[in-house]
Length: 401
Image 1 (cartoon, rainbow, N blue to C red):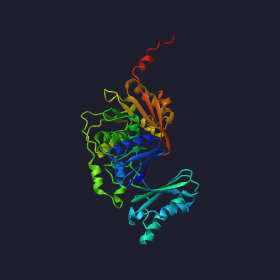
Image 2 (cartoon, helix red, strand yellow):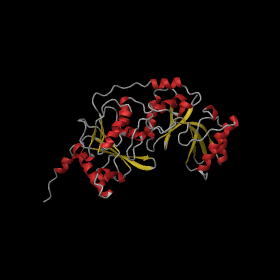
Image 3 (cartoon, helix red, strand yellow):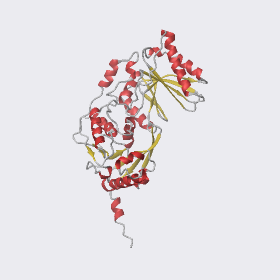
């Protein structure tokens, strides 16, 4: 039986997610991609295909199974459609539930009231059948039911993932404002990085970018260390799930390091090292405690610098905290820019930031800027190509007399 799925993702990564699902579909005869929409990708396939996407997708936030879709006028239409669905075929009355609702241009006045109507409909369905209703658990529910409204139609989904897919199950510790794992994985894909290409994060924090890259090199699926909601579904095919996991083949470990990180904070370096270990990385990822302004290329061959530099108050940990943040940012990025220009000729530098004025601070012209959203925060991935020799040409200009 074919099912419809919607895979939400961070805004700006829809094309990257569609490409990734296309790669996952090569392992399946039934998984098909339909279209990208702002915030995600529609696809279809067997229930086992949802197992595959949950296991292998680094970019999706969830895998939502479409239960019903219809036009609506008011909250009663939404209640009736939800009540008519055979929820008992998917999960048991003793499972806890949570309901979430998002809307775009919906004419309904209260999303909170509409969410309650969806919850009531699911509970009433079970009460009518068993004289008993599921309990609500907003923190750690067994089943998540997700409603989506546009101006005219209502779609109700059952979440096959459980906890959001960016929660890989390896993270032990985080620093301030850690990058979400699926966003880090998306940035790696958009940057064009591939295993074997040198990768350097000079402001690695707790190591999210490094862990995602290292797991890709090692062939460790992002969902290898966690459980999923679909494992609690009625009719869950454990044999098929074990076969899908069994198809994963580890890749040979690299003989020489190609992934490198550094941070000004020794605590962060320790944190990144612990997270790499927790994520199952069994090869060397060299990490240094050093200021970003002082770094040198970690490999002879040029590669990719990809980092999420600090902005706003976070810059204070990397400079003189007695200076105002603006002055600290100017001094920090001026020094970092000089380092990139003088030492990283031939490298491609990708900086992911909410500071849209970053190129001006660096005194560099970006070769590309890609818009993203980190939650509600508008961001950019700036690409700078470090061209060999341009600093020498600047220095060779005749002096004015």
